[in-house]
Image (cartoon, rainbow, N blue to C red; front, side, top):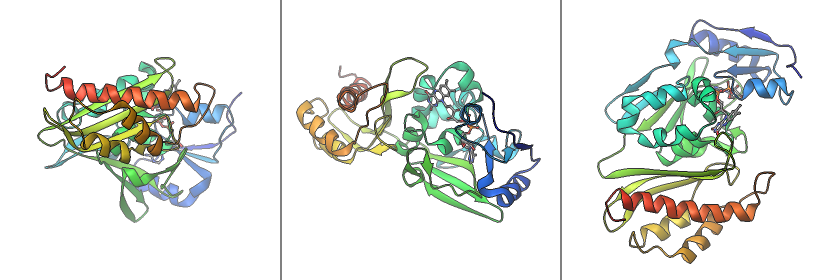
Length: 289
Ligand SMILES: Cc1cc2nc3c(=O)[nH]c(=O)nc-3n(C[C@H](O)[C@H](O)[C@H](O)COP(=O)(O)OP(=O)(O)OC[C@H]3O[C@@H](n4cnc5c(N)ncnc54)[C@H](O)[C@@H]3O)c2cc1C
């Protein structure tokens, strides 16, 4: 099967791209890495009268730092993020997650802006960006707005992005002293979607973890900040978190779904297993295992 016909435009500047978006709105689609959009078009799951190709817009391609933030242009590709020394130093959670995304071919083309805009519940980076407290810049012709990652994901494949907007930048706060990250996922195949995954960032000492953000993906409609589970972990000694208490808190936090890959019940079991693995990563970074 092939895509329905569409007009293809490749703007030379961000301003031109935003003007095209203003003009064509819901009849347009942004083309970034094309790793989700093109398969969706070819399977006729989706169509658009006009495709706006944002590859080549230099305004969207850099990874830069300011005092407290690392800013990634929307078309920063997974492989560029993986290779970035700024990301390695200030947001290592992204480096932990990227090897789990698809295959090398997907990571060569796929972009951070595409991953976030697609809002696949099984995607790794949306959960990491929620755990890191990232903010997204959304631009439309003549104006811009910032939105917190946690507020951006509104449902399965649904976001706060309007039809006349382009996601232009992802701002990630630099990791602070004493903070560390942990990541885990369980997938049926290495290149497949996560049946359950978790991204965590917090301040760990030998005794406890504080200021923890633990965000699950692949288990619910959107990335889920596990508020009750976090309070159980923060309220316990790091080596002494009770499994039964964790499982009870997770079942309050998460609303898992059944699909072809995995039952809801198994997903919930994986959530408990992954939480224990994440705790072990925090402990092992302190030489306690
Ligand atoms: C076989 C396979 C396996 C995969 N495995 C994984 C995986 O394990 N984990 C994972 O996270 N992903 C996986 N993916 C998806 C992949 O990560 C895609 O790269 C990602 O979902 C979309 O990024 P993209 O840059 O290719 O965006 P595109 O496919 O170009 O666009 C995706 C959507 O976002 C919109 N969009 C893109 N950029 C912007 C922007 N800047 N502003 C507004 N809208 C925008 C597009 O219009 C489209 O609706 C897989 C894909 C395939 C084909």
